[in-house]
Image (cartoon, rainbow, N blue to C red; front, side):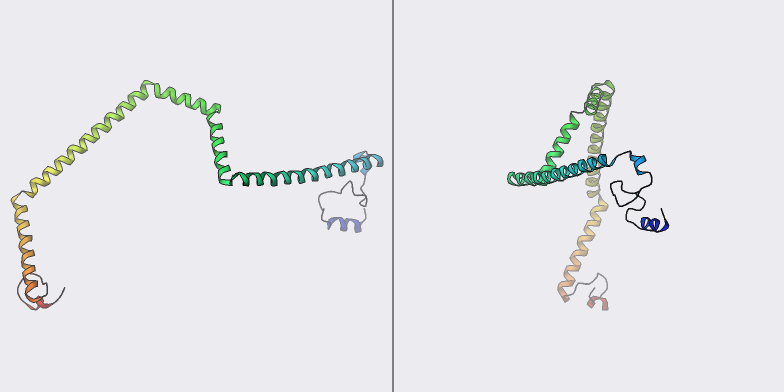
Length: 194
């Protein structure tokens, strides 16, 4: 090849892909030796290639038409993508449930649930739950009793009486001048709002 042909080949869109053996315009060094085909064989292969490409195009058109028809049928049946997803998910779950791995794992878990160690552990957790419930119940009863005892104590009664007196005094002072004020001496604070 001369340098002019090399420049054209380097700038072609098929750069680096190699020459197309079916393109008669591009000269190839040793093309007959590499493929070993005669002109008649090349012509026959080109004819077969064009037939295969036509079949591929026809199959694509048929597939597209079938997909469109299937879409119309689904629409008429009221099948939405969401319902299809649900069906696929359900089928996948059924497939998982019938798989050897799932069945083996289920059998193993069933064997474990029948074992003595599992039964003892389950009983221990059950007893611990009952004991915790009883402890919390008795603690609640004890707290209620202590609060009742505290409410009936003399110090709580005294505190309760003081709060009632304070409330009564504030109510009577507020009625006298229309302003609620803190308890104490009658100073300038008696007439200032909070």
